[in-house]
Length: 540
View 1 (cartoon, rainbow, N blue to C red):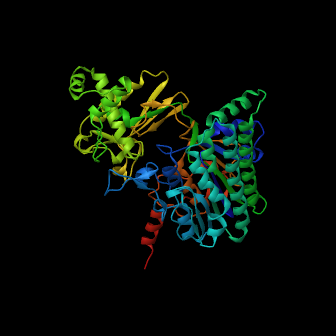
View 2: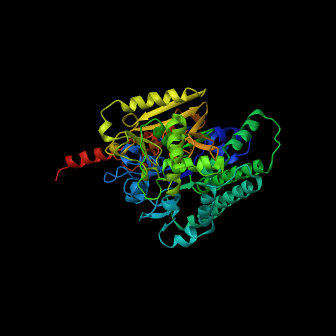
View 3: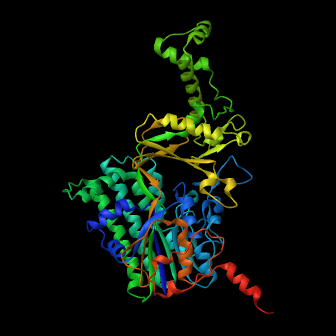
């Protein structure tokens, strides 16, 4: 196999790309789709960047990686989370095995690949730990890390947190800057590649993910117009969105030219770590657990424990504009309805949390008194003393009862051992929930200072339906497959290069994508354990 390219379009969704391809907006992506093999790529649970990309490139499910969210737990500190780093990749990724077998790898902007480490080729980190970028070898640092695209990328990710997607001027400016990141990265990488003598290239385009977080509702509106063949009355944001997607297609075309024009044999893959849909509401799981007495919050810092009386004084004084004696307050507290007292207690809790200047829920959970708790990863954990009880069943029943008041809403509750397996399952959450609302998904929050249910600031949210597309001389044409699992990508790439596949991998080789009479299809799949057994049988 001469060359293999894996182009990662972070968050790409067939619901967006298929209608736009049919409308003729994406000729290069359309060529790959029409002349290659395609499928839905089923992501991890939950479909989040940090477990998804590592699962794809290692061939392992999160239960063997020990990463289930944007943060990771450790055996030493189960109640706290730490950043995901390149240690999740090192020594078990497809590029490590390829490097060991003397293939040259070129890795660009892969999320959470920080700090970088030595490979047979080059490595440039992407979005991840503290949004830092780095490069191996060091000379690439100035070309790609300190270049305009990386500096602008860091700025845009920060501005995404406060972006108003309904403000035309700021939205258009944001989209144009995202497009500039894609353009600058493309130019820098294409200029660099001829000097690298690469065999395998993996490049992840992260700005697509950020675009869809901010404008998924507007993107779907465009898609509906194209699908219904209605005349498009484009506003400035619509035009900017279309231009951005067109630039993604130009990028696909440029990288496809790398192999089509120079190699008789190649494989070109387009993959995404997850798909996208819209989120109509945010559900505050932390607040719900507190209100239903599953989780307790501690107020342990002096100066933050505002007495109930002082809150009542403030509330009543605001109404009467006058002073209230302590005796009157005592009498008022005795006769106040329970719902008013609860409101005052909630206000006291809110005052403490806001005064602490922390959004980290784990800093406030009273783990000794909580039966069930949540952490920043938006997942649910059962406290050790209650692990053998049916409290998790009770919680699911209670949550289902609460959600029944909302039409078309379905609760998906994923228990750890039902979706993960491996030696790091003990680090997984006991329960991961997803709230489905027809084709939409509710966001999950763990900030108890926010309302129980509220409108999210940005409309886009991940779902599990990613994109898989493969094209090349040895790959079938115009084939649609059933779902491909995200950890099937790694063993498939290793098989293309005829590199032994570690027997512990969860993924399988997607032999069905190759032409039946092709050399790759006829080749036997070699696993490491088979090689070891053959070595043992050899005479000394």
